[in-house]
Length: 358
Image (tube, rainbow, N blue to C red; front, side, top):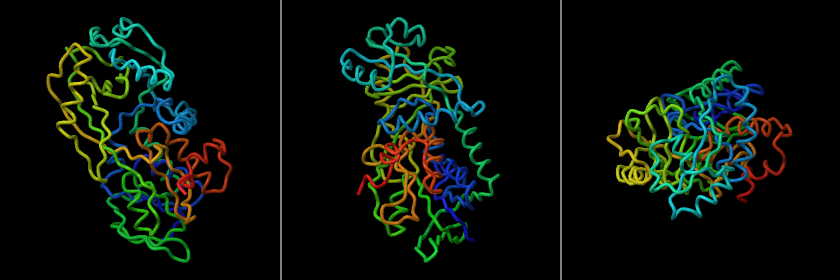
């Protein structure tokens, strides 16, 4: 089968790119697992907080705002709170400025989240610029758009070999063989492996595990209107989820690309840090899981043609920002591939380009 664009990876990066590229050429997306968004995209905290991350990430997330605001029911109000112990005052001050939060009295914070321990929580801050993302609705919207444009999406289609040809690439996969003019590498933790398979230099991506535990709502309280709560310095975070709470240790432990699982000790230590700052202990864990957040060396997404092979396009390093940046990231990818002038500006295009690693 001959196509213009072959996308490797069926997370939100690959699916959103398929939707955009289907407008300008023929597309096939190959996902190794038996369903889309199996790995990091399916295990996300699902928050749109556009002031989170490095400056280039923030700019890309802010550029995604118009898409989110126009998409029916994809966002719902959540709000965000930062809390800190006395010994974390410096981290609190840095996070306060970086994430454009407003300091509030601890008593006011406790009105929103009654379980905060006033003996431990000495600083608090708040912002309303954080929204829950209906990740399934967003993913399905992009996949419907891709298919409506003629894109084929194949699951259970792990790529086994890539070979350069006179016309582009010959790709072997568990779903068959394909010839493509361009490869879009959106393979998450496996992006460097795909580059090696293609005979290209890897860029040095690092998959990092993040664990989560789902716990009962404290003392049977209604947590539905609680904000997402971060401890300063990302010592842990908590977010309401379908009548319960998700609590994460916020760890970033480097691991090889894999189907990640939660480390029991890391989870226990993170829950202990959470319990230090609340009045209600964790009675039990309802479920636990982990995902891989994959970062480039500078923790900024990589979007652009490979420095040595113009028919190989990187869409990688989403880290923890994949969902909140995907509208602008996928549009940038399509603009660059189509030869259009991106709306986001030259400086941001350069900050995201693989050329920065040359």
